[in-house]
Image 1 (cartoon, rainbow, N blue to C red):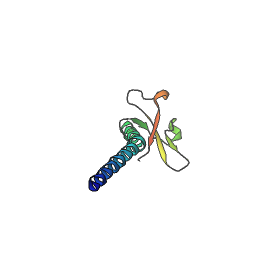
Image 2: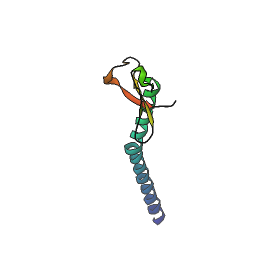
Image 3: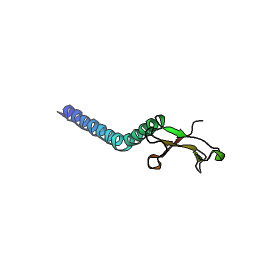
Image 4: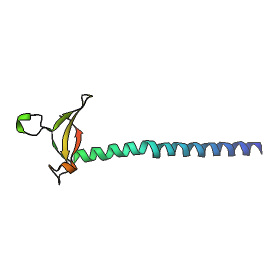
Length: 92
């Protein structure tokens, strides 16, 4: 009987541990991964202005305080509309 109780306690421990890991993944890690997937897909399908030449009128290359550069982008069906404007990482 003692062996059966020990196996039951270990099973309960494993079920609780799996539940804790699943809760951590789905409430903490998955939202970050999903946001990264969405923003990467959004930027790969966008039309971007990465023009850094101020003489051409529109400056689309933005540099943040941390030194990372971003391009001004729009979805392909709303090009130039400020309401749909977003920034993507400059890869050039």
